[in-house]
Image 1 (cartoon, helix red, strand yellow):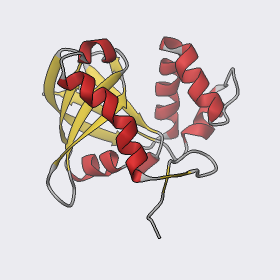
Image 2 (cartoon, helix red, strand yellow; image 1 turned 180 degrees about the vertical axis):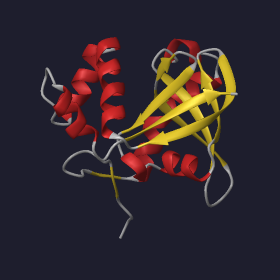
Image 3 (cartoon, helix red, strand yellow; image 1 turned 120 degrees about the vertical axis):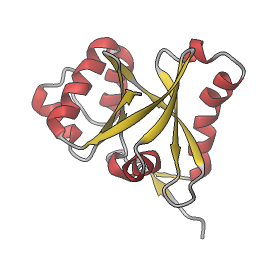
Image 4 (spheres, one colour; image 1 turned 60 degrees about the vertical axis):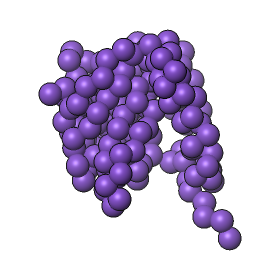
Length: 162
């Protein structure tokens, strides 16, 4: 029997690992051919070191810049491989638009902190983030308590450039 993964959405839809790789291919390809700045206003490439293998792992993620920090959320919570890699080794490399830098990543599972991040994302990208959240069962005009309830089981990472 093939090994199945869940995508972390409410309801646990089964998703094969190859589907994750397929979804992650376009952003990686665009950055590789020099078109990262076009895609980079919402997606960065995060490089972590594998917690078991020690190999470098590249993951495209949506992000927000807050001051000089980069913040990314994990819809799969602490189960996401990239998040677990950061928990084991917080030294990361980030490619965002035309910039490339190293940084230290700090993890958080605090629902209040994640809800604040979600409020910011909704203000900056109301249609995109609102649509994603509605698919996941959050009301169209969420209250702070709706966001905190959704944030339970989620995680986020703040990356401070060195």
